[in-house]
Each structure stands twice: as C-alpha cells, then as structure tokens.
Length: 341
Image 1 (cartoon, rainbow, N blue to C red):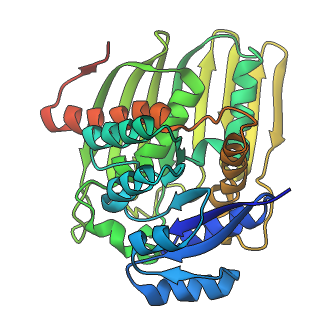
Image 2 (image 1 turned 180 degrees about the horizontal axis):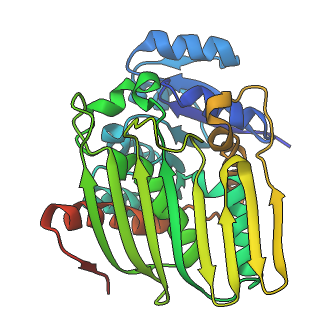
C-alpha cells in the first residue's frame, strides 16, 4: 500500500510535534516543508528526513505531487493557504484557531466545498486520553443526564516563554485556548443555546486577553462554565496543560482531576481510576497530554483521507466552535448574553 504524500506549511513550535505524530502512523509521508524563513524549513526537513524545503507555497505546489496539505502556521495565514490548496483541488488539514473571524472561517469552508475537497481542522484537544474517558462515562449514562459542568484550564505556567508570539495576538486566550475548550464543551454536551463571557487582561506586556470565563446553556439542558487563564498567579493550581472538569448529573457526578485521575460517584459509591496519556519519546514532558493527543487526531483524519470513515473535526463542524469563540468576544465587549437559534 502506498503512502499519501503531503506538504507541511509552517516550521514553528508545533510543526515538529505534528511531524512526529505523523511518523507514528502508517500510510502518510511528508515530502516537503514550507516556511517564510527557509532556513527553518530546511532545518526541520533535515531533522525529520523530509526531502524538500521551500519558502514559497506556490512554488511548492507547482513542484510537488501531493495528496493533501497540513497547515501549521499562524492564524493570519490560514485563509490564504487554504484557498491556495483548494484552487489545486488538494484536501486540507488546518491548525486551530481556523481563522481570525467567523466570516473568514466560513469563506475557507466554502472554498473547499466549491472545490470538492475536504477541509479538516487539527483539533486535538478532544482526543486527549482522559477527556475521551469522560465522554465514555457520559455516554454510558452512569451519572444520568448532565445538568451542570465546569471545565477549567487555569495555570501559572509561563506560556509566553515558549511561545512569545502569543503575546503579540490581539485576540489571545479565547482564540487560542478557548478554541480547544469550547470545542471540548461541544464534544461533551452538544451545541450552545446561549452564551455569556467576561475577559480580563493581567499581563501588561501582551496585547490580548489572558483570562476568560464563558457560561453557556448547552444541549438545552446543561449549564456549562468554561474557565481559562494564563495569569501566572503562583497560587493557581499547577497542572499545565491538563484540563480539569466537574460534571453533575441527575444520578451522580464525574470529575477529571489532576494527574489524569477520573472519579465517578453514583449511589453505588465512588470509583477512581487514572487515565494517563500514551508515552512517546518525542513528546515534551511539559506538554505531554496535549502533544500525545496529536496522534489519535491525525489517525482519524488520515482514515478519512483514505475514505475509511468520517472525521470528527471537519471545517464545517469547527465553524460551530469558531462561532462560540467570536460570540464570546462579542459578549465580553458588550456585556450581553448571546442567543443562538
């Protein structure tokens, strides 16, 4: 069986982990890397044994025979690259956040629909091992019907040291981390009926918001509170980059605790078990649960590219997450509840 050939656009912080994830899978091979700084593309290509490096996306697409492209660049370049790939009838995998606005995201989805090619979003957060287990508990109805939930990613981790460009974003935590957490909320509880958000800006040296709280009514039943912060407060619980949860149902509760422990409480008592992520040699220990989730996410997308199943994180599906992100900004800006119909 031959491999699908792909090119990766972007050679920054996350690109090497995306490439390492692809190397864990069969039936896909990176044949070219493109970055505006060609030296970065060349260095990453040497590290991973990729045969070609480019600085110009159009030149790459003219020279290489590809089956799909994987876009791991900054959000401002996503639309241009997606439209370029669609014009060449190439399936696209795009990093989150998909676009800098809902309108641009919708245009990207439309371009791929018009071209008859799939657009997927590399939304890996929902593929984390403990989060998949929480979903399994909810689907089993062990705690009955959820009526209230809290999803937290609150950390004192100095995220700007590893990724200083995050401090240059006018829209930071909701667009970056919120894209993940709001997608997880949809994955667990369905679509939002209404939303209210408040944001704060604590770091004086960054442009965007670094604290956000989003309250939603989801699936017509559950009240879901999503809390996120990179305030670097030393008193904040330090389990970066783990997501913590507490979900109440009419028959019990499920809690996702630090160090990947899941505690399910029903009338029969409390059962606790640890669900750590798989270990890969290439994973940065500081990002273990996040980076390991790249592999099952990519496996799902690869099966879809081979025509063997439907992926969860299509561009059309992710539009609903993008809608929540920008509705949150609108709610915070105008201090109002956003209703969805």
